[in-house]
Amino acid sequence: MIPILKRVWIEQIKAEGFDPYQDSTDVVVETYDGQTWLSHFVTIPFLQRQMFVSREVAEDEAQLLPVRFIPLETPHVIIENLLPETIEDTIDNLLTLGTFESVFMRYSEPNLLPQGDEALSQL
Image: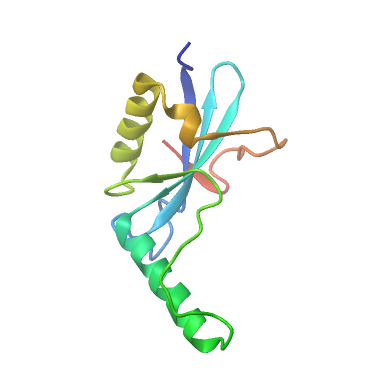
């Protein structure tokens, strides 16, 4: 059964210096059945920048080999841009394709969702 979305929040969407074509953001989804889901949306330029930084750090450490890499621990969605419409459309597609649960992790931490417009921008 496809979950029905109640609310979607995008972290940093209105923050000063946030570039929807170069950055990353956490996306929190609440469904009508009361479940909360979390994923990290990133652009390719963001990943490239992180890989460049990892190489720079490795070059400064004698014990590390200077290679570009990035470990991805939490679920990530690589996306063209972080505009709200693009994120919403991506979530809709993930739900329709049945892949939503493979890139969003269920989050059960109490008080995760902000009250009003505290930390995340609600779509």
